[in-house]
Image: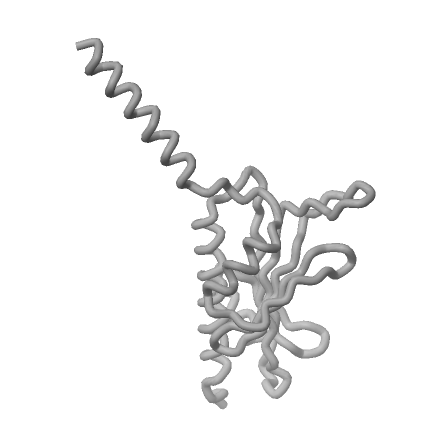
Length: 168
């Protein structure tokens, strides 16, 4: 009986170790490589990693032709000779609606329809959709991927809504 209990205990420990090794570690800060790889799995093209004001930025083009920007947010001041550690990211899509006289009304309507993101009319007349994601405490890679999928879906639905004829 002791051998059976010991065998069960050993198999349980080994199984939990294997599961821990198989599960990727949580994402608790901006990781350019992981985010760029995730965008590539969505079929995004022209994925570019750069920096703006010393904060990491990734730009890409979705399969639908939308320009996406992932901007590092919540960054700690970096010590000399190292990059910032950023604990959040903002997903940004920009749409050209300059030909639409109802841009502010449209942004308000989209904010109610797609509560996942925030829509604003920029000073240049473009429509901006954003989503802010906190990584503090860590999120699973699956959760991060789903958040990106959800925002990309909202962006595509917005693109389709904007393509519809304007009602008089």
